[in-house]
Image 1 (cartoon, helix red, strand yellow):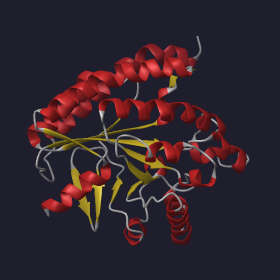
Image 2 (cartoon, rainbow, N blue to C red):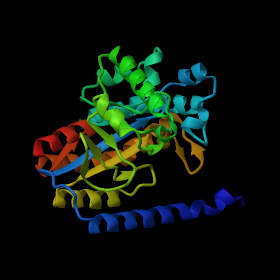
Image 3 (tube, rainbow, N blue to C red):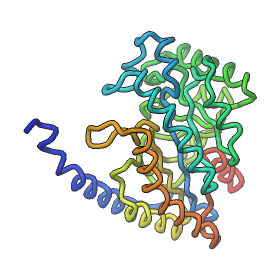
Length: 293
């Protein structure tokens, strides 16, 4: 038995303990800012979005994206996954923040058009231009990334106001302010929203995948409702194709996505209908915080 298979049976147990610990931390945490009601926020990281980008980059950008998969493989998976998620969000009327890699504006791709034509108004934010670690970029290099993003998205009529740092490495917040961003996703897990200068840190609460417990999410959401805080979950598109070391087919991925999200979305829509929860994007959450200040 190899080392990976030896520990696979322990992974669900470790995940359950991690989620129990995280809920305990949130239960004991003192809220930094009280909102009008509970908020449910989803942000989606689009690391590549198109295998055409890997061809353009000649494989030289692989290490900036994943240590396990090539940029081409991630792009191929995300080409499958994005339409599935857009359809899911449309069906349940769930607005989300899509953090797009700016280089997508270089390719003849349907991703931006798909989001712009969605029946739900999503927040189209930025996820770097080449998906580079911002902590490793000089001030000039980071500014060049932001300029490329602004120029590229302008061609699609998009002005991004939400920013998700590649690999969650937060840096150069002063440049985000200068380029008109209103919010970003921070690095430290937590509930609620923090004001950082002119920006709002829409604190990430938990990264989710197929091993995340619905019971844990439900408990945490109820805690947010009771304390008028935000629950911000996030994921990479390609997370939903890979599970227990296996790459799923498109059909298997679709079944898994709907099996995971359907009960969660039915529950959040029930709470929204009762008036104790609002469904927000990162940008709309930041705008509501501005109204409170």
